[in-house]
Length: 146
Image 1: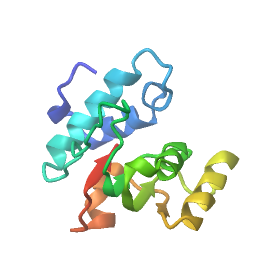
Image 2: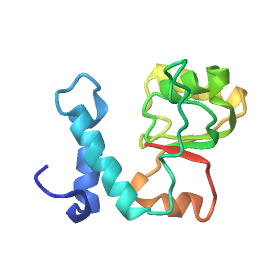
Image 3: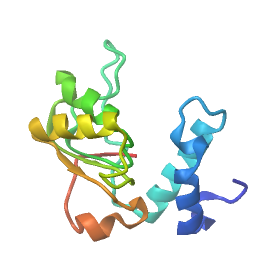
């Protein structure tokens, strides 16, 4: 990861997003890898306002007043499930995406996807986060979380 975020190719971003460092939160390079990918997306999609997260310091949670939210690269969808369960997140709409196909999800991911759908969320699988415009075009979101 010696390259700057702007000089990385889509292929390199794909490899980073498929790496254990990106997918496993206990990996020593997890935070650094997420930072590189996040900066690449901010550079690639400058109109996406992924920093529209308001924090209520009394509760310590940054996930407040999210509005219509897009969750990119959700894996097993457990984060999306936790946001939906948190009333203080004030979600008015949710689209949760996974890079994996629905068929390749582990059982936990399938269960979470069904729960999210039953509660009004949209779950879309097999989404390449380097080409979000193909899926979402000009659709607007209040908050985007990678």
